[in-house]
Image (cartoon, rainbow, N blue to C red; front, top):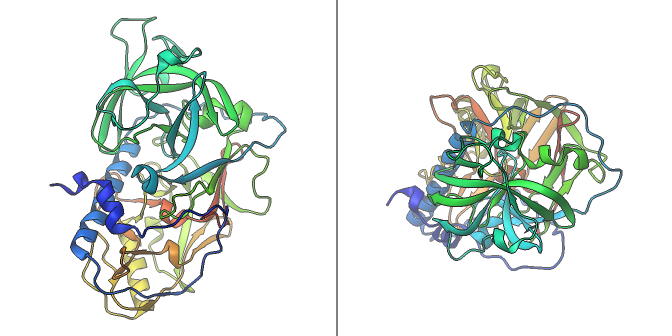
Length: 445
């Protein structure tokens, strides 16, 4: 069996420590600077499960960088409504749906049909499984267009049809617009439709999304996805007049099963004291959120990294993106090697054999240094131990939760700052003002 085929439920049972749901919205996390693993972890199974997630991350990165998104919509600053919008509760999808994405409750149609949709800032189109979908998860809820009084298909020849990747209009103008898309290791066919979409009490009338008809592969979130990228069919673009091309999220710890994280829409209600770095634009990958990472510290020491390995260059593809659908941070090979070596030098303990794609692992108690990502604009994001180390379920082994990207190819120079390193941070995406912000916020419960 290939590692990609390893069931995520097996990953959960081996890799994650069970948690108990609590009702409070925040939890004061212990800031321990040591790892004390227990002996006897099922290392071979854990290694295989982590390798499966690492392979899934790789497939995701390849697909989102080659999705061929359309051009950005107008860059004119929108005028959002002068009111705060209710925050949307979000939760890790691992414990609930066995997926790596973070999820929110969405109501689609009239009357609303509830789905747990993935929130993905590196994708544009929204799509949900529709009734009679071939290859969709039979045990998961799906959307029934015939049960919604406000659903309608989007015709070929419409502006929205021209914006989807690989549109299909075999019956010509006026017929239903179909399209094909790749997501991670899966492909699917969908029909473009419109209906009312509600995230908490934030209602969008006539939201454009894909109605899944045929799915191949097991990487598609079972109840659908809403893309928060920068392309023309993303949530950001479709609601720019309402939410001003601004959103933020706080991601709870991936072990949690609670909707204690929040997605905030619009400029009002965002943190007032938040350090921001410029948002960069890559015309070859217009949907992604690029930032200028200028250095990395391990402990108090700046890691010696060639600036060419960090520099933003749309031509070569180098640079750094923020992504919440990839779990483990991927650094360009020379960047990762420098960080890994500095981390090992600081820990000063012999490493255990590599496990599950991680090459800096320990099976004894070690003192864990902080890791700090430094960005243009004097912004520094310091990661506590919980965002730096990944633990086997029994605690027998702990590994540095980062890995090197591919050694060659178009993605070799890309750094992807992933969800585990963003946990318990408020991350602000202010596209209207061209900035990304970070602020520590404990949202795990």
